[in-house]
Length: 409
Image (cartoon, rainbow, N blue to C red; front, top):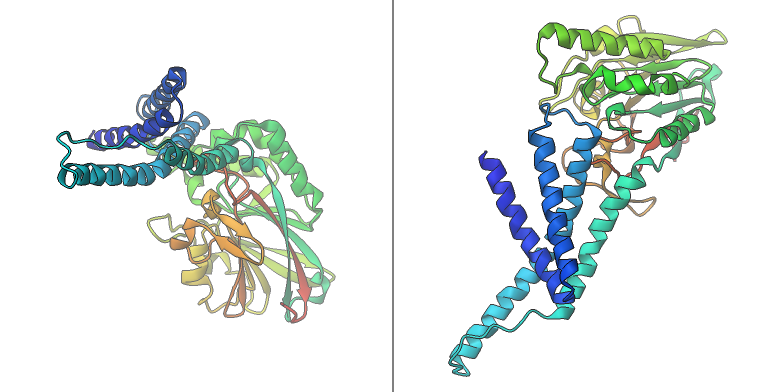
């Protein structure tokens, strides 16, 4: 209860400054009323969605949009607060100066300056418009990222072998079938030799995938579609009526993947053979530090793999690579992960800047990294969760071509 009281007081404080800026710029009372009404509707909807209709940490589209709209509105007001609060302090100081120095009998604080409010509103419009764009356009702005990686010990038969990686589908968040169909078709359009999915098929419940299973069942590649589980796939963020209900949900999710043609690797490995040579696809269950599930067993997953095999590891959380994989006795040539989503927010200009707040949590958070002669690609995710959008960090389909050689410029 206390956190809701704190939230409401903070919300009223920043909304007050938003209203002050609006009042300073326009005297139209209808605009004033619209701002107040929006503030009440956005806060009210958020409170209702996260209390009356709440299922613990279950994030459905309605709940996500309530959070997204609140985030956008609050970001607008938060930009205004330091500017207008600073002006209020200056106005108060001027009032004191007028009272003490000019000996003005009345304590007079100058009125709020219109141009300051105009500048503040202009700046505040940037995060507001960006977050709204991310909710209605950015989350489905799929992009294909192509990489070529060279390995001296890659079997010659696999020189030029292409894999497509997708991650973090989060089907429980989807709200536009046409856009998702476009994304699925884009994956198939890459015509890679294999498709590798690195976890988080759903947000919380296996039933979230039911409306989409036929669509994702269309994913196909010559050498198959392989998958692993992510932290959201276990149903750990739902208050189940019984342990049996949770186990049933988990089994249903496994069956769904099988029905879609996904070869789900539960601490297992598979071999892809070509012209008498082979590469190993090793898949571990979720393993993540910082309180995340640690069901992944690297030794068990690779028990049928030889040390000199060329190995591609599927592991949902990149912290697994950092903490265990790169120091393992086996040399895992390429690890594919996801999980971070790039926080669905950041700035990326190739060759110039790559930044997201998630970098403060994860050392390896998006793209290709190399340590100790081993590579990891952290996919930014196909879907979204929480904030129902993406700003600057767009949904990703990764295509990696394996080449035999040493040229990794």
